[in-house]
Length: 237
Image 1 (tube, one colour):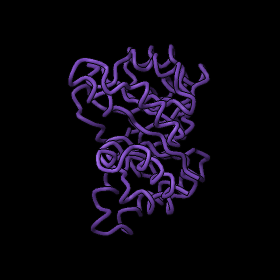
Image 2 (cartoon, rainbow, N blue to C red):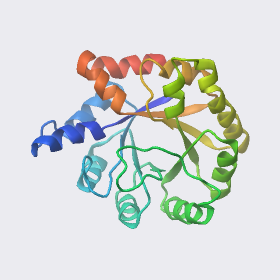
Image 3 (cartoon, helix red, strand yellow):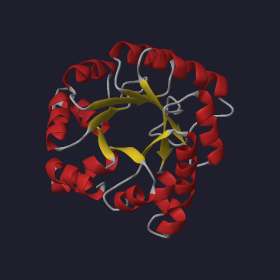
Image 4 (cartoon, rainbow, N blue to C red):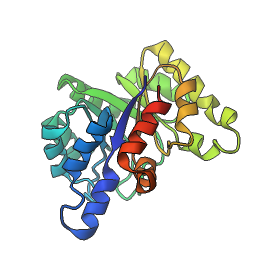
């Protein structure tokens, strides 16, 4: 069964809007685990506009499932991850002013940089994953830089799913097959939702983990966190 890691950035955004501690990020994360989530994901950005660096330190003490920290490996981020030592770090090439992640790594162009950063994390005992587009050349490049896993950037799948789901998923199946051939673990995330997650999970061979935040939290406004988490888990079986 594919594991569900819940990205709690949106909880932090809501908290920061009022400047206090409501909703309580730590409590929500603990509740999500209680509802069945198998991991907690955060994506701190340099301006700390949602997840704060201190949140990473605090969550490390309370998360009992798998803790995944995503982000662009700038020096401050690298220092944080090495301090906190989550189970997994996911490297994302987002710019400082990006609203959300919008592309995968060019693993060929950035080979030397990624190789060095990944080695730093793996030497510290942290599993590494890198955000990539569903391009077999980028998967080959991911193997060359030594990552443990890739996270398939699924925006194009989600965008095209309603028009033609078979065509939308084709490049992801090809990319996943290549990753399996190379012995790289497969994660996925970005714009996956209750509407499209089941078809994706059933068609991607050896999908280990999905990270879902925006859609899950938005759906929970209507259905409740407990219901939504278990609806995802049912679709991922």
